[in-house]
Structure formats: C-alpha cells, structure tokens
Image (tube, rainbow, N blue to C red; front, side):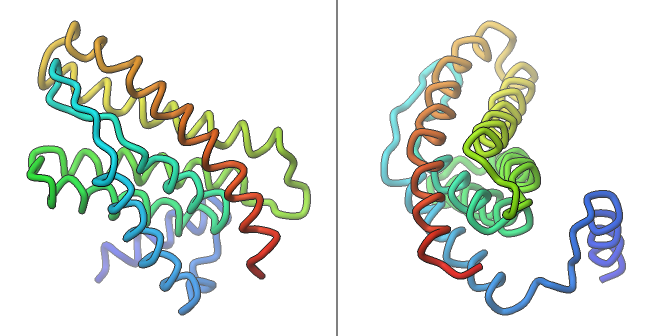
Length: 183
C-alpha cells in the first residue's frame, strides 16, 4: 500500500499527472484496453527463432490506448495486457520484462501526446516513435543478456516492423476514436 502511494506520488509530481482523476471511466478503459492488447498479441504471432520471441500486433493496441486515453491507461493497459499474453502463451520468463517494457512504451507515448488542446499529427508521430523505440531498445537490452548480442540484433528488424505496424494502425484509429469518444 505504501509503495503504491509512493509510486503514484512520484508519477504525479514528476510527470504532472493528477492521479486523483483515475476514476471508474479510466479503470474501465484500462481493463478493456488490457484485454484488447492481450487478444491482439495472441491473435497474430510470427515466431522469431533466434530469440524465441514473436512478431505480434499487440503494440498497435498499446499505441491506441496511449494516444486515446493517456499515459496511465496506456502504460497499465500495455504492460498488463502484453504480460498477460506472455503468461497465457507460456512465455513465463518474459512476463516481468514485458510488463515493464510495454508499460513504459504506453506511458511514454501517452505522456508525450497528453495535451489534447494543442495535439497535432506531428505530436502523435513523435509520441508513437518515442514509445516504439522504448519497446525496441527495451527488448534488445534484455535479449542481449538472455541470448547474446548477435541474437538480439536479429530481432531488431522484427521489433522495428512491429513498431511501424503499431503506428500505421494505432495513430489513425486513435484519431478516429478521439472524435467519437468524449474524453
């Protein structure tokens, strides 16, 4: 309980995010988006033998959650949904890494695009690229320690394509949702 309060206080102070605004609407968005991230991650999987990883479209839902609902929903939905997909899929060793990496991806993309009044397509592109690079670099670092530098290098192009697919799908869907949903 104390750790949770310290984390919320740290995020609130350092990132100017008011945690009091995490109401039932946001909690519902976290649950729905985490479920969608999980399903999208499990739905399309292309194996990458060098690292035993896989290409998936779950990142598109992480970007949609982040750009549509902001950093807290994006970070929690991205981290929880992706980690749950790893657990369901049997990739247990990846669950904690995925929770952190995809959570950071969602948090950063959502944070950089949080200002709804002055948000442009350029802002959304920057948010997506920053969040996506966190994912690519996060998995690269973990894979270097788990499989070695060469195997980790093999996965970079797959993660970059996954990042590009996330932006190509996520940005337009987020823009369309923003017009439909009163946030």
